[in-house]
Length: 348
Image (cartoon, rainbow, N blue to C red):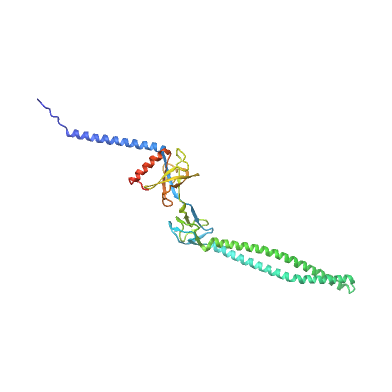
């Protein structure tokens, strides 16, 4: 009985093995591409994700006058308390205004003093003028009762004296009234100039810039030697007790979020849970949406507050915000994020 022994060609065996590996790799690649394409098609129907930023109410410290920064006592990220001096400036505009107001005050005080002197002289001479007028009137009446028997020249002198004394009384009385009114107007003008001077000095505060609130110094800060136009910020103070996340919602969303809906905030490898606190009736440009292929995308602004127990990233941090369209998926997403946290891929 003949037994035929079948031999295996090693070349064919290697070809068969290599072909199987290639086919497996090719199939795996196709399945992976199909999965990626399927996910890219399904993702916009599941959730939306776009840029946001951690912000806080800010107070801008500036001067209403053109000035030059002499020194800055704070640096970005430093905490300050209400009443702290954060910078000092010097303003040639204020120096000129101060000199002009001081000159106006001096001139106004001199005008008030001169008017008061004239009023005092008028008040002092008015009683004498009235007595002179009374005496002239008495003499004129006597002259009228007895007739003008002493000659026409004497009669003319008596009548002239009566007329002159009456004019002097009327003139002094009118002058006294006008001087009093003039003094009242000068005093009002003087008070206004003094108020303006006090307002300027109080607003400028000798160049010392004081923060009215407690908080953190932002990165928008001037430097010593820098010239500051009117109204330009010298220092910005952020009130970090009222932090929030400002989210630019994607305009291609398929569903409008509601106040109170949960969101997930990604800060690097850290995931933070929050809720929509307010939907603003304004839009803004998504900072990371612009590219060389398409213009920047705009979207509605949304204010997000973190859940109790969560901590905010540093102020001005750029984050990614994810919002699930379907509330039924919240439990699945929570399970997924918890798994990622347990594996150490994400952190809280």
